[in-house]
Length: 474
Image (cartoon, rainbow, N blue to C red; front, top):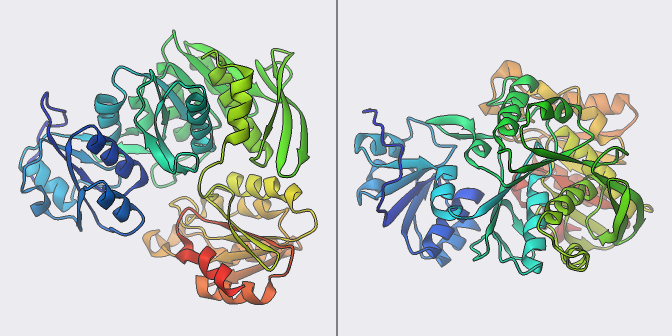
């Protein structure tokens, strides 16, 4: 392999190729570039619906599998996804041919965010929901925002938009950027307004420990410009210790009485949650949301703090909160059969699992919460959270834990044990069960589910389409 220094974007670009185009972010970027008039091609190891259909509708040619031949047309620029390794056949060919290349955030800055004011949402949890809500509020306010977010916004039926307004909303990911840039993606962005929702250990495949995670967030905070504002959650000790490294204006939000933005007077009356917002002790408005759980109210609080800087009226804000439809795979009801509700959620980190179960509990007071969990992230398949997960399922009535489907990718001495989790849950008096595969879970739920149950299915993957298969069998 011949090393080059071609990590750059040429002055004149007409043709662009994306390696690993079928990821949610890369697929959105490809579509945005196509909409801007570029000739776009791509490749990926696994090309299947819905992303393959989406890209086909955009008339973007996608090659199945990574091969050096996919670059035979000598594109003016190659955008490399963060999952692409240096020894990937196309990456190797790209370097051999000395083609100009860049990472996804570099491309976003150069082609999409140029000339706009970035609003960047960061944190271990809640990034997608918070960024989506901010984008929707800006849209309802007539500010015509651009956005690129890691989840599908139901209001837009997509995760990106090219607006003509001055603001761009970006989900700031702490995951690494590319094989030639191991720093977090969010360090590429220069926000006018930034949100920090929380800092916990995650992504065990790239971070050594919590201190390593905190170090990258510290760098992010220190780089927020003095003329910009950082809006930070007040209930996270890790954040409080990091804020001293900031040189910008800092506002806090949450439940503390000394915070700039305070959440008070929460009342649940399904399908809505009612709450009141205070700014430095002064009531600024009463609102309602159809999102469930205190964690989503806190996400909403950060969005309220952001849009206050944009002088959006309370009337528009209330309308936006009332009409926000949420994000697919975030407490998304996939269907109901015989009085049984099947819900899909992206939760996989122990905190997210705990808060998701806690959030839905008040909305199903007369039925059981049946928690179905598939550990499949690089962190959840490792034993780093082995002793933490038992605390996450406390409010569930019946618990189904699947064997991690990709466990062979994890070193044997680091693997998470679903059997041990079930054993630990049973020791706590919980009705917990282990399953070797999805079919076994389906058989069990078909026998055990009863009217009034909420079957809450949690995974960051497709989970073998368990939701639709279960609905057909109920």
